[in-house]
Structures are given as structure tokens and as C-alpha cells.
Length: 542
Ligand code: ADP
Ligand code: ADP
Image 1: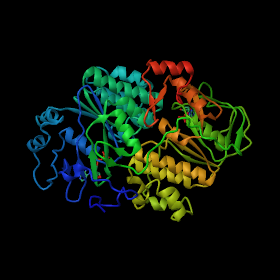
Image 2: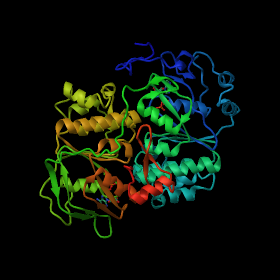
Image 3: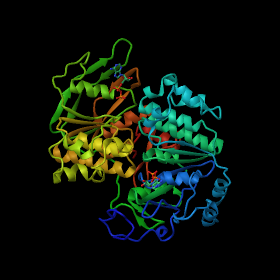
Image 4: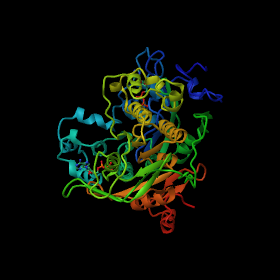
């Protein structure tokens, strides 16, 4: 052990090249003896969106509280009264000096969007518009309501809104404020890709056109890439210490993060690289169909939502990605497969036993994680179950906690484990990426893939994180239509054809980063964007 980590060394699989030099200095803030310590601070800049990329529990909120003037950083001397004088001395001559002078003078105002929007209805008792109107400090609210598509729900009580609606309301409520500094802790959970891109555009406009400083934490890398001007990578050991690097270009920051090596810092943060395959489409064995289904249709009564499904085949032991906007009929199709709903047209001669992980996870029972999981599977506690399910989902540390005091990301990992632990014909996961940090997304992806491969299980993954879908899926099922009105489900296709269908609908093209081959969203109307659209290659560009 190098003496820094209080628990297990996160790097035990690899040789430690060196300690980050920051750790030889005093931290910016330490909560107490043997308590969490934060090294480094992000630099908010007017007119710019500054991104932070890194795991949860690494000190991002602590950093923001310092930058908002809510706590005075103690520079590691937690037993003395901290002072802004000392903080200023520490940062004199750095990019933070002017900013800290303003914080010290009490001259920085902040607006923030919390990470867990599901909590909002507990904090505010009223209708959506009552909440929103109280935030309209710049006269921009109406525009946000329209562009974020929340007009239809403004008169509804907040506690009747879906997660995706709450996320957009929270974003509008934050951006509508008239403040110097905006902190957005994740914008993408529960939003579909179109909504994520719109949210990123609105945030960029606020920074650029109104000359505000925006700091954003985001774990959907395609969106972070679009959103930020500069990027701080955060690393360390969640709960023990966190280091926030100096700013990097967004491209470099994400690339270094993916390769697992921060070059300026000479720091390895992960033993292996995360790789994207340019011509991804893995050959599916296609040996045995799990189910072949005919054309189907289903509507929820006169003038309500209706869904049309093209006939198709789902193969055994494939991971089928499912993409499409919210409210387009994805869960309706899952219910048709289980027999919970009867189709209006088309006959299903099978009833699939589906293990389903819903998008919004409600497991608020006062029950311990280990008790909950062992009630689902007899395999609980076996070395096989630990290797395949518990370890990749990092469940060890939370086994003894109660379900009702888990964070969003912890709850998500328990729900994924519970879904995989059931006996079923088909595993359906709705937005497994929600509230997972990037590192956890990578681990959950490999847990789900390994599970499908090693056990010949079939998995259907609905997600809006295009990197996660790319890394997970063998084939793709694309939904389109008009959310809440009608939906159309295409037959499952190869990745290339599926991505082209899906992205042409959204009018978004991706290019490949030269170094890591990761997909990056093209600027609309750029040369590449126009060229790829002409060629009809929206994702796997030549
Ligand atoms: P993040 O926003 O990156 O998830 P936080 O800044 O919220 O991380 O927390 C980083 C660590 O500091 C966590 O382990 C948290 O438990 C700890 N921490 C936060 N606030 C306090 C506090 N007031 N006293 C002691 N520890 C704290
Ligand atoms: P997705 O899973 O793609 O988000 P859903 O299949 O859950 O979409 O829902 C599609 C549409 O059908 C939504 O507008 C939803 O409000 C509506 N809907 C879902 N269930 C019912 C129901 N039991 N009665 C009436 N409308 C419903």
C-alpha cells in the first residue's frame, strides 16, 4: 500500500508509476482527520462551459461549494479557522486568482441543478409553473419551456411528472436564473438523445451569449464533448481523496480518460484502455432464434397512443440495443412480449418470461442489499455470482446498507444485479446508464456483455448513451414516431443500418476521433456533417 488509500488500493492490478505530485502538497480542503481530502479546484470562466469528468464521490460537490463561497477551503488544516486570505495566497498567480478574489468579496452568485431530480417533488409542493415562475430572473423562461418541450406539463403538480420531465424542468429552472456561476450536476439522466442535444445547446448559449460561467458534470461522453469548452479530469479514490486536474482541451481530456493515462500528470487511472471498434458490428451467431414475432399493433383506446411493430426475430444470446425517444412505445412492446398486454393485431404464440429493470427504480424498502439480492437468487454469495455480478457492479461495499439510503448510482447497480440474477428468457434493461458515472458505465457494460456471452442469455438494452449502446449491442432496434401519439418499431437490424436509421431521424452525424476512434458528434452543417449525410453514413463513417 502507498499509504494514501484508506481502503483497497484502486490500482492493485497495476504498478503505480508515481504518486500524483498534488498529493505531496496540502489539499485544498480536508473534512477532518482521515476524512475525505480534495486536491485541486476547477476553474470557472465567464463565457465558457467547463466540464468535469470523473467518478462520483470524488469531491465535485465539495469543489463547487468552495467556488460558491459556501465553505472556506481549509487547505488541509481542518483544526484551524480557515480564511479566504490563505486561500487567495495559495492561488495567487493562477487562473483562479481573480475568481477567488470575487468569492472572497462575496461577489459571486450561483444557480445549481442537483444531480437527483427525483427528489424535487419532495422539496417543492406545487405545480410546475409555480416552481418555474419563481426562477424567471432573466425573462428567458418562456423560451426554455418551449425549447425543452415542457409546455404540456406546466399546469401539472410537480409530483406527477416523469423523470425526463423533471430533468427538463430542473434545467429550465436553473438556467432561467440571473447568476454569475451555474453548476449543473448531470443533465442527461432520463433524457433521450434529442433532448440531451437540446439541453447542451441551451447551456452553451447561456455561457456564450450571456457571458456566464458554467460548470458541468456529465457522464455521457458524447454529450460532454458537445457541451464543454475545457475539461478537468477528476480521479482518486471515491470517499477517500479526489484530485481535480488542471484544465485540458475537451478532446484530450476525454481521450486521456478513455486510454486510462493522464499525460500531463503522468498518472495511470485505469489498467486498460476503453476501445471503440470502428466497424463495430460484431458477427452475431444468429444460430437459434429466441423468438420470431409477426407484425403487431396496439393502441391504448380511442385517440390515445398507438404502436406499430414490424415483424422480426430476436436471437438467443445476443445483446439487442433499443433506441428511440421517450414515450415512443418501448415499454409497451416489452409488455406485449410478456403477455401483460394483448396486441390489437397480430398473434403472439409465445409468452416470454422477462426480467425487467425499469427506468425509474423504486426499491425503497427498509431492507438490506444482501437480504434483497439473496431473496432473488440462490446463487447469491457463490464465487460464480460474485465474479459475474457483484464484483463488476461494485456491490461489495454496499451489501450491508439499506436499500432506502442508497444513492441513485448505487441503487442502479443493485437493480442491474437484481435483473441479471433472475431466471428468465429475456433480460430487459431500461436505461441502465442513468446515474452511473463513466467508470461504472464501463463496468456495467462489461458485466452485462459477459453475462450474455457466458450464459447464452439474451439481453435487450434500452439506453440513450450512444457510447454505451455502441459498446454493448450486437444489433439495434430503432423506434420512431411522435412521442405520446404514435410509435413505430423497426425490425432489429445490423448496427450500421440501425445507427443510420436512428441518427438520420435526429439529423446528427458522428465522426471518429483520430487517436481513440471514439465517435464524436459533428457540428451541424460542417463539411463532414454534410458529406456524411450525403453518403448516408451517420455513425460508422469511412
Ligand atoms: P461528488 O460530488 O464528487 O460525488 P462530494 O464532494 O459530494 O463528491 O463528496 C466527496 C467525499 O467527501 C464523499 O466521500 C463525502 O462523503 C465526503 N464529504 C462530503 N461532505 C462532507 C462533510 N461535511 N464532512 C465529511 N465528509 C464529507
Ligand atoms: P417508452 O417506453 O418508449 O418511454 P411507453 O411504451 O412507456 O414509452 O409509452 C408510450 C406512450 O403510451 C406514452 O405516451 C404513455 O403515456 C402511453 N401509455 C403507456 N401506458 C399507457 C396506458 N396504460 N394507457 C394509456 N396510455 C399509456
